[in-house]
Image (cartoon, rainbow, N blue to C red):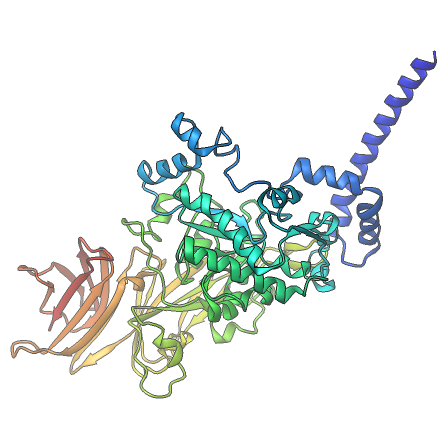
Length: 579
């Protein structure tokens, strides 16, 4: 009888414990995760997580996530190699990291393969057991997140780094040895570079070990030295917005500009574009902002694609194999795999700097950049002083990103209660700072509208009206004049950043007596090329060609169209236009 009673009691306690667990989980999801920093639910949960539920939290982080784990070895693990010895597995014909990299490159044509790792090794740093095995002095340090960080994300108060500590190496010689051993197996397997994550979290671990800035300086210095030796320039800095990290970079120039891309969170897409645009005001002065990946079949894919096209940073997608919007990707990527990358970091136009483009109901976000092999000269000469050399063209993107904002209650983007209304944007040539020194006319091509306008001055405007999540990208080229001839190449108009194909252009008096003027044009790639000119050209020639290039010309608009074949980055097309 006593045994049956004991069994029933155990079952009853198990049922009660399961019910309590489910209830606690629902309370956390519905109340705690939506509460502000300092509120009663957050204070109660913090007490539970750090004391009564501490062991439960540890079990959860270990079994359900990677966030509680530490780096336990430098060699590739069982995800990549069936054997503890990569060389033995390679000889036996089994799976290895080296074989995977070779297959990606040789069978699938992938040019570069990168590996991910956290700045301090893994989410919770380095395991003490690895330190003991490798002669590294690992010290467990507990995070002390600031009040401001907790206000943005209260969960940091009970994340794994705060509850259970992080394994760190504190001296520069130890860090040099650590990164050398971390990177060596990757390089031996043919990996070309690394994307280094979880960087800003390091600042909260500086208490008692010299402070966050000093700790970040040691880690970043050792990381970049190892990458320079092992991988050359192939380094992406990720989740790195703390100034303790940003101000230490001397080797890696590619800087993630945003939170993650969240494909299944509709309210996040417009906020993502807003964040990367405004963040690039600072990050663009420190490196090349990376506006992150996206998926080409997502509901907001074209919005993301348009932003990436004018970002001045890399363009990459995280599509599942075989799940691609090929037509959209072809507007971003050339047949040789290259992109028409703009010359600087995409930034908000001056009239957007203090506009609430997410919530005021009337403002569009406008982002500008410029194209051409300009070597940064535009950045130093954009104030109109002196004789700044103009870029071949600029690009301005207009986006309706109304209807979502960051909410401190839910700690993420939330959609407005009412659907956003259409907004109108006035796009002016002088929205692009680099075109301000030009006092003449401008040719403006609208990508989606397939429309050419010629504006009389930099303060004149082209108007676009945008529904929610709609966008338009306008290529703006200064009109060059030589006597009666006007000339403004617009680029490969099937690409979103059409003007990115224009490497350089000139308009001069023709050297031969039988022509009035001669325009020279270098196109980065092949495709359908448009330009504005007047009057109708007498001929168009490919440099070195024996026959003239066929073209069409619209007398009403001045639109010149031609098809350029066989142009690549290593062999651009050189064209001559005669009047």
